[in-house]
Image 1 (cartoon, rainbow, N blue to C red):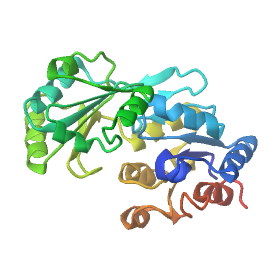
Image 2: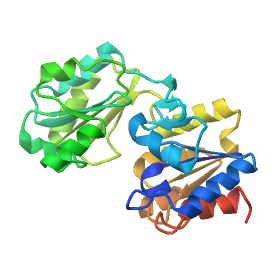
Image 3: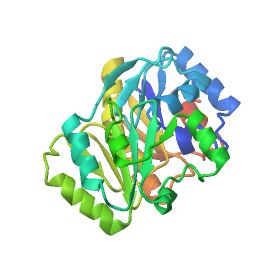
Length: 279
């Protein structure tokens, strides 16, 4: 019945130390040999997602940046990308300029990050701002920007802009953006508290899975999605079988059709065995 399985990465495919278990890798190989398809739909950018896909043995196209980009893992070539326009980028950044916020621009391979005030870098939760942290971030594709002028000069394509700050400031920025022509963008504020995730319309996991289905000539009803976080909710709801990880928040588990074991207990492998390998 099911022909395609789409996996989230963090908290799902990988464990809490960032590893993929041998059992999970072997199960993905077994599914591929049975002619079903296993792929990825992740919030990570291309640079951060490709090594995981390679380690998992996934050679078919994957979706990155919450589904905004489809990429071929073996070549790194972008099959399809939902870019923000120059007008939309300027509208978003101008609405945030001068306010106490942290901004992250995602160009697919590089994260460009900026905060005018050092204290607002606490929203950059993946870097503790130590020297070692900065070096690791640079190697991992993070560039810290010095001022608004440089931030606005970041080259296209830009697939996602994230803005974080106090709740009232975030609300002001959202209202300012909505006063412009934002008909082609989505502003998601439900993923993390005090953060705005801004993409072109269709830059969400459900739409990313739909485009993967089209590529593989598979229907959404023939598709399984497995995830653990808020940005996974839409894809879990729209596929034929939405599976939540055992480590997912209770609210995620409630909307899922099935709950598997946690990411520390081979939850992905067990779900693939049950619904694709029929073990």
